[in-house]
Amino acid sequence: MTKILFKQFAPFAILALIAIIALFIPLLPNFDEGKYNAADVAWILVATALVFLMTPGLAFFYGGMVHRKNVLSTMIKSVVAAGVITVLWVTVSFSLAFGESINGLIGNPKTFLFFQNVNSGAPWSLAPTIPLTLFALFQLMFAIITPGLVVGAVAERIRFTSYILFIVLFAVFVYSPLAHWTWHPDGILFKMGVLDFAGGTVVHISAGMAALAGALVLKRRKSHIEHQEVPPANIPYVLIGTGLLWFGWFGFNAGSALGSGSLAVSAFATTNIAAGAAGLSWMFFDVLRGKKPSVLGFCIGAVVGLVAITPGAGFVAIPTSIFIGFVAAIVSNLAVMWKSKTSLDDTLDVFPCHGVGGIVGMLLTGVFATKTVNPAGVDGLFYGNPAFFITQLKGVVIVVVFSFVVSFVIFKLINLIQPIRVTSEEEEEGLDSSQHNEKYFQGTLIVASTGMETEMPTT
Image (tube, rainbow, N blue to C red; front, side, top):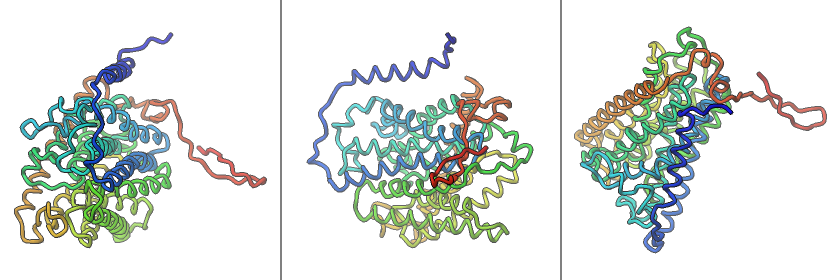
């Protein structure tokens, strides 16, 4: 019998312990349905499912861009967060993010430990028309996709077990505090007056800065050092992933209205328009630089537009979203150009697209936010309130510094526990095989003489 090492046994033992503890959590009565708005509940249920769809969308998006020997390892890292974060969110992370505030810095872990008081508790103060359980599940989907975004920066070289450990530490020490600061009424950024409608800081800037930290700690791939072109494994995967992300983002942004009214409709519109404008902007800017219009260019640009509109989706006017998408795509495109001239090996440009895109979105929210769209918001610089732009700028600086420093420490700590990076032999072999004992074959559809369709693998 093969000897089982402690590092092999520990994850199973921890999950088993959590499962056993969950059996003994006190049962409480279900929530009173009479207190809630049925239309709001229905919409947020749909929005929650839409946001979850973004996770497999991200897997296709990233999986299609890496080398064919790393497709499956990249895709599973995007998806495995759905398991890890779900268990962690129920046990403690939701409580850290939205529990009773401790000095505006973090939630009390006891407030909703193992989802106690969630199913029967009072609704969230900022979402009074939906059950607290639904709010918790909606927020869970945001927590799931955030560490998945970081995968793109460290793809093709991070060890799978090290990435699992990163997910846990990032969720506890980066994501949960930022969610508390930004979206809890007692959070420090919330009290400063920082506005982030759906996660420009909490999701995208945090992921972008963690991506930068990870790329610096893991250093460069052999192919990057040797300036080898790595052909995308499957561009149609990227297109499918973009479609799923775009579709899911309607739940991400419009669902963040936490109701089914006009604000959700406005956020839905700004989301779609910014994505379309950014996709075109990226593609046309490539043409200006002497490139051909490409599938990858449009897809990456559209995602950047979705990132940039996220913080302002429910605060800016619908026509303004064209400008936000247009500008964000150009700035991120330039950031990718800058990165390509450095030694930074951010495999799939997570920092230029999500980090820079999120920063641009937050700052443009500071410029174009208007109370005409959302009375709960603030007028921005464009409407005569420069103070709000300064507030947004301060918020961005705080989140950038915090996310980068803590993420850098997390990656360094993991490297002390075990090698965070695969060996050069494993990297050369490909992570699909060396980490998962699986292999991706790009299929070619062939029609046989019988008229039957068969799938033939190609190498």
